[in-house]
Each structure stands twice: as structure tokens, then as C-alpha cells.
Image (cartoon, rainbow, N blue to C red; front, side, top):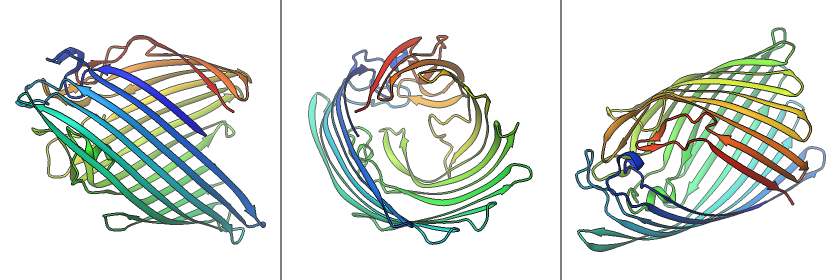
Length: 403
């Protein structure tokens, strides 16, 4: 698998207040080239062993030239004019083996290795004088992991997992995971519970961005727990469910609005909520889906809200496939009020909105398809960020060719 993408864009800078509030009306220019290549192969060793080996390479070159952001209500200094030229490369190798020890016990073992290399040369114009900056990243991460799947009978499934990450320049991190599913055959009800810990290194952008980057950022860790109940109805043609979740993030990377604005580690952030969902296939050619999620987030020892995290989010979608080579899709999405901020306006609440998207896809063969889509079909008026109105009715044509 391989993919190459080249893009050139011009827009108002982040935090500038966009089309509606930006004082400086010059656009920020951004040119980027991306290449990703992936290879995967596997095989069977005897009746009980199988293996998979994956390799991938990712490369991104980006040049940015920005007029900066004028001083405003939130920041009396603003952001100076700036430019940067960056390149980031990531190479990843992973190998996984699965062993069926018994009918009730399957064991998965694996290792992976990743190398990230990046450099960024930047320039800020402060009081009319250029100030050069430079950042380089070269880090390696090795990890090993295992997972056991235990199915003593048709009703119970247990998952036990463990991952150990050994990143360069940071201490090793152990992330356990436990999961359980119990199916009540008589009522077609399934109960699930999951608990686990996670680990994530700060990104190249978070460490080295000329404006908000922070080379002192620490890795994020997390602990999460969820409980789910799913019920099949109408002879397995439909199912409904509810999930309760509770997650805590430690050293979460988030933007401190300053001044000056900078990415920082939040000591602890919690996210709790509930999700309701339903899926149905009333006839062979029609799929219906719906979901609604409520999430409450909180930054420990801070009154500042997490930006761009709506409490309410939901959606409805329908997919109709009357013929094997034609798919019709329509989706309705709802996003509740969102807390956001910009330098000229300070804190603002973006109002909730409903948007409708539609698409039609024709497959000429297994390897070639063409799709016509319309985003924001009914021209909903809303902002996804302060001062940046959503595009109106936006038609798109997409072709896909596999070889």
C-alpha cells in the first residue's frame, strides 16, 4: 500500500479570529507533501501458529509562512509574523504471532520498533528583527506486548493484555489491559467491561512548533474503564446498547492560552460520560445507525475548560445498496455548544449545530470506484473555531483505484 499527497492552502492563522474577527487580513500559506508506504505479509506454521509482519514509512515536508496574529483581548502581544520549514520521517516495524494453545486459549505475542526523525527551521519577526529557531528530533521506541484470549465456554470471553514501551530518553512504561464479555443466550444480551492503561509520546509538532511547541513536554499516560450492555432485537436484525465510560489522563498535552500560548502538560484531566447507540438492518439492502454521547471533562485544579470538547454529540445515518455496484449514503450530525477562544475575542461559546452530508458511490469493478458527495447539504451556518464559518454547500468527487 502506498499513498502520496501534495497540498497547498491559504487561510487565516489559528487563534486569529478567522474571517470574522482577524485584524491582520493577510493569509497564512501552507504547502505540504506527504508520502506513506506500507507492506504486510504473514503465514501459517502448522495448525496452531500464524504470524504477521508489518513495515511502514511516513514522510512529511511542510513549509509555512504566516503574517502572525495582532494583539487582542486575550493576548496583548499577539503572535509575531513567522515562517518555518519542517520535515518529519517515521519508520515502523512490527511482528505478531498467534498461538492456539487449546480450543479455549489463544495467545498473541509481538514486538515493534519505531524511529522518528524530524527537523524544523523557523523564523520569528520580533520588533522588525528576524529571530531564527531550530529544532531536531531523533528518537527510537521499542515495545513488546502480549494478549491472551480465554473462552471457557460460548457465554464467556476474557482478554488479558500487557504492553511494555521503552522510549529513548524516557522511562519504560507498562500498560496492562483487562476485558470481559458475557453473553446471555436466552435474552440475546451481551455484557462487557474493560479496563486499561495507555501511554503516548508527545508529537514532533508539540515538541518543535515555533509558536506553541514545548521541548520539555512529558509523555501522556491514561487509565480508562467502561461498561457496555448490548441487546439484540427483531431476530438479530437490530441491536441497541449503552456504554458508560470513565477516563483519566495524566500529563495530557493541551494548549495554555498564555500569554504567550504554549502547549503544556495538564497534571490530570478526567472525561466521564455515557453513549447510547442503535443499529438496524430492516431489509438486506438498508443499514440504519444512530448514536448520542454525553461527555463531561474537567481539568484538575483549574477553572479553564478544555477547548473544542462538546458535552453533547450525536448522529443518524442511513446506507442503501439497491445494487451490488451502487451505494447511497446520508448522514445527520449534531454537535452541542463548544467552548473556544481566540486572541482578538477571548473566550467564546460556539453554538450547537446540525449538518447533513450525502454521497453516492458507484463501483465499476473491484478495483475502481467513483463517488459524488455533498457536504453540508442544507447550508447550515455554524463555526467549528472562533471566526471560521463552516463552508456552505460543498460538492466533492472522489475516485479510487486499487492496483
